[in-house]
Length: 459
Image (cartoon, rainbow, N blue to C red; front, side, top):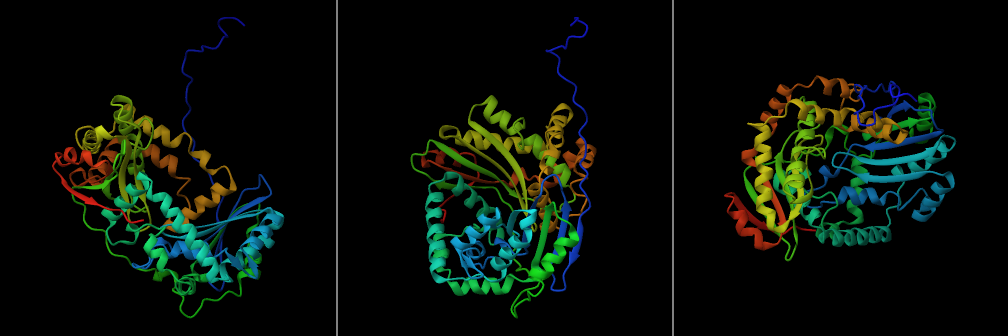
């Protein structure tokens, strides 16, 4: 090969512009009993990823029973339709299917993964789980013991303590402020009557959306769901989808330090932030880009400053966590103990700077934009990813073109848009700082000038 044709191994290859994705059209139907059915075709493999979303989440836990929604969800596959939990697992295994259940802040989900040829049989198992659970006292005892054991594990985790303390501090009495897993005391109080009452009140067809992505025809799925779920009727006490429990408004943010003591801890776990915005916020794209430059990527300012330049931590990040009703802005890091106060000071300064004298701009802004757009298509390659994307549209009430628009919308966000979003949504004067660490660092934290509150975290 001549020198003229040889590749230059030291030249950075040119990067093409990111391409938007184009998802197939979503098909929808509604059964007479209120069940909504959404499908999205993906025919690369003969498999189907199906989710049944129930419009009730841990935000709807009773104030005196945090963890009830999660426990009631766990109880669904402990025995249903004449099968105990082992027989349910064996039936699904024989079909080559998997069923996962989970309770999130805004919705409960059952996720079914199955071969196309076994979709009908797997749906019948799902129907048993949702509509005919056994709810035996012995199963509740076992689930309770597993939850209590899990809480004992989490009690030893500084990160878990920081998460609980931060949520309680910024959300207050709002339903997002309590741990979805519950506490040992609340789990001990949950009775089978509580579980049955929750199921009767919230597990109603009018609150269910069935989402399927993969090798399935819409009309075929509608026929299956009609045959299997069509006779399901709401109980007398069921709450319609529009009647979700209202929760208290989060308290206004204020500057303070919440300290959780961990004697002898070599590191301090930090959470710094405040109440922010729900997912449906109109400046979503500007906030995502702002966060990518501040702390949402490895090259963000927060990680570069605390890890690369100062060596206080292995990693520091920030995020806008957006749920249906509200959200938070939070910065987090695990830092070496003797740099606790210095790290808090640096993180506060970074938030203030990106809102004030050092807004994101130029190459820094373009690097953040590229980190969000160039690999975006990887999130939509499999049926499981596609059904997860549709679930976001359902839970947050987003338009169908949300994901198609992401790359074009992100390309159109300007430095002025990001600066305006930072000014509107960041409040560096009213940051709540949670520190989980050794009490010997308390004096240095008090020297920062904010109110310091020492608390215990309930598990």
